[in-house]
Length: 227
Image (tube, rainbow, N blue to C red):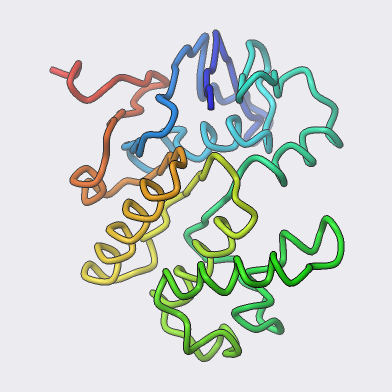
């Protein structure tokens, strides 16, 4: 699925002052690939994901996902588009503490109505694939950090979106657990033919990536072009 930002500018007000993140940014991401966005904290990695996900809209320019221009959509239509076409994985997991692993996995599905047996079976199979077949009825507080992140991955995949966006998905995990999570994400994304874009300050993800970009001073460049 096409992902393209064309002449996008984005700024925020901080302390009454305008802070420019991007100016006339143009970039395309390859469909069906594992892309990594590298950059220091505050470089604009999360902002870029939010623009692709329709959480933020640009000050100017256009954001295309598939055949849709998110910049021209209403808030309501962007919400529906995001729910049906995009999966999100966050650094802090964002699990609901009062819901079981299975209930958290099905949460996005339930926003569109009652969950049927087929959808529940799909969620169960994904939990098996991420190694949580014996933890489906567990509560988040009883899971390790790595297990909670695997629930977040399962939730993102459960409604079969073509695009997965991940914001520092291993930032709260130790090195070994983070690497195993990256390996699992790379395997599942490729098996299921998804497009994955990860924003991270850690270069650990490079080993799993098809395409690597670095964001610095409001610019984004393929790593191979950096000198």
